[in-house]
Length: 283
Image (cartoon, rainbow, N blue to C red; front, side, top):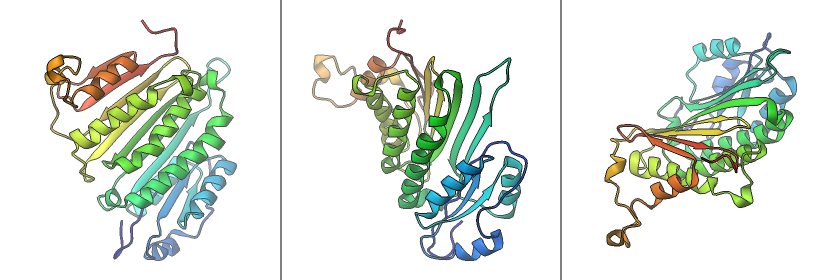
């Protein structure tokens, strides 16, 4: 939601909790603040007092106003009262004595057409959020007992992708799946993102890029989906053919196939699924 020339992005960052503990001014006061040029209104939902306060403080350092809640239902109430531009949630099941595996679900999604054009603000919020998540939240979880699903819905702009790439590669490395200095995972994901943004959505920021990462110490499954017209992967020229030696098309797809353990395109070619397993487990 943007007032006059103001760009407004909103984050909902949460997991199940029991009470609402706001760490910012009331919503009606924040709505007035949102009219200020360049100020984003951010909703943080997280039942850990430390994580909630920490992320709120870091986002305030970017010049944004922050509303905080301790559970998802409280965030939904706030969402009913105002139209938000960016939602981020972090839902956690801590497991039990019989099933100790921790299951996490993290989502960041742009939900308004105005926010799709607020690239500079989104860039800084994405990088700040992922930096905090990696340092404070991910580092506190045992890597051998964590299973996580990360879902991102972002505008088709490559300037937003570097922070996403660095976070995903670092996260996979901390789970023990790769060694960054010996892995080309960054290259494969970069090719997938570039193809989806440039060739799929044709750099149209009104179209979303959907990225899903299902991560554990056993494997990493990445899905990249665009809103383009699609293509037939079988029609891509083989860059290894001498007739195509000076053609650039097809090289990115070939790199992805060589780097990942499994690669699968949807029938329309708008969705790409890739699997990466630990070194030594490749069939």
